[in-house]
Length: 301
Ligand code: NAD
Image (cartoon, rainbow, N blue to C red):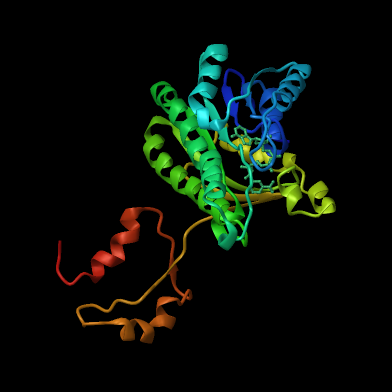
């Protein structure tokens, strides 16, 4: 058995920590020495209502284990208040797990702008505001670990979840740039795409499956990404039950038209070659992305 990874001296904010995945993350970090801000608005799955009960319950559970935690009932849309709670109570912020989430599922044809906007505000704007408020503190102390929570729906799309897919993909883009901007200051940012039985997934998952896919199977990965020994940055991971895997972009060798004139007909002619994944590369940056495009340009820059 490996040595236990501990979080003594660290201050962690876990958003949406009153239920499901966030609760499991908060309990583990609290049990292993972190001082935890248990943030939860206490609303329903669709973003309605508000209650202090969910966050209070998790704070009580952490305290019952001998840990230290404080509740924050603000919406992630007021991210600065959540970070202020960490500073007021614990004087610092080292770890942010952006986990709060709701669903407003509807086919795109029936989706209202309210459904779109609410999902954007909780997932994207919320993650932005909490992380943005924590960012200067992490940068100035040269230490930070941020985890974004995306979804397979964001990566692959899912019927009835255009708003949620947009938001979850947005969080991946946010994490990619924050990883670049934070890396030099030891502020590392990674993203998990979990599957777990919870109040949220209970709306789409049969009860037996929900029972088998416990949130605490996702927490070890989230917690590892928050540990000082973890140097991973800008990664995207799928996780659920005991399964853990990393994702990356893959690009075909493509086709260069070179200096020959070409129109849609030539694109159609080369369609199979353009989409042929028998030879691939895995670009990791804009520089690697544009390399073949610059090679294809008919005049040097
Ligand atoms: P959950 O409903 O059990 O917990 C989410 C918590 O977030 C709730 O306690 C809720 O009150 C809180 N919350 C909602 N809006 C908030 C706000 N504005 N401010 C603060 N707290 C707020 O859901 P879960 O399944 O544990 O989901 C956690 C995260 O994981 C979400 O971001 C979700 O999109 C993502 N996710 C979950 C699954 C899954 O299979 N459970 C799959 C993919 C992604």
